[in-house]
Length: 82
Image 1: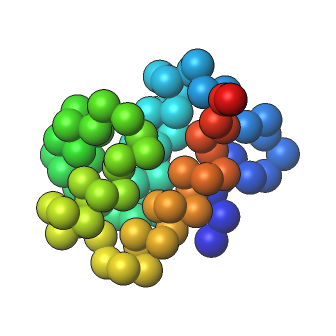
Image 2: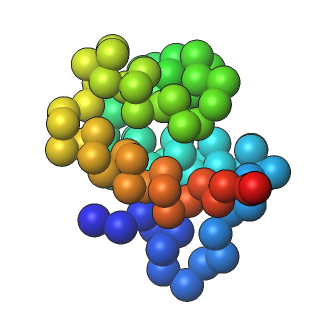
């Protein structure tokens, strides 16, 4: 399943952290069905969105298949700058 951002929308730029976080919360809540409390805690703990999959896995909030989805979602949404 591709992130909603993969339709006809522009990718989110790295500098737009608030937009990235909002999209991330939407994805976690609506696509992976992670609770609002868990989502809020993970996002607050995660200073870098690239660490998010590790935190989700450590807290046992995602299965291995969902972890793969999160990694693919982040690859598609978070545009890295060089």
